Length: 208
Image 1 (cartoon, rainbow, N blue to C red):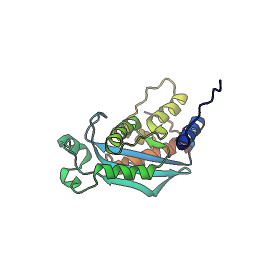
Image 2: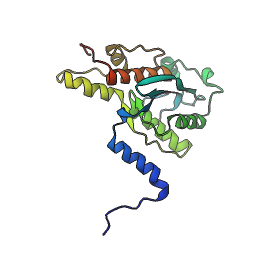
Image 3: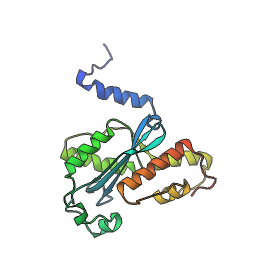
Image 4: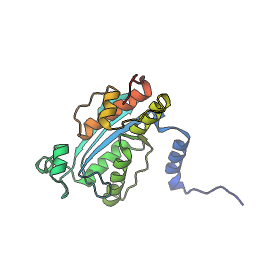
């Protein structure tokens, strides 16, 4: 019996992409997209999206001219706690993009490039739910979580150290400036710089 699985022609593109990322590390991609969401909740099962930020990394450099910053019309779940953290009031979001249009623009921006984030598993879980509900689209891009990359790299040098993986601690330890904390684009840019420091720069002598 032939053990090979016949793959329909319309599935070849996705199959080749998955095979490529099985054989190559996403961190080595020529282009990577750093993304961040600001949401109404930290529970991915019910978090609604308030804003989306993304910036391109190309050949080891953050390309500020190729970035995405989208505000989404206010969801019913927007409450005082969300406003306190993200400083996005209902009035700030009135007249902004419908969620489906914001998601289309995000998909167009990221294409099939690897995604980079600080707590990327959360962002991807939220995006997958909304993409399924709004557009019927999947999200299967390769992923790079900067906190995991930091942990692996630092643990090799300091195996017995208990690491503080909070966003602000990583930024301070890696000497990364953070402009616009708790804004989607500001956090996406900071994560891009953390990634580049971990990939190209030297680790600090002291870590948290």
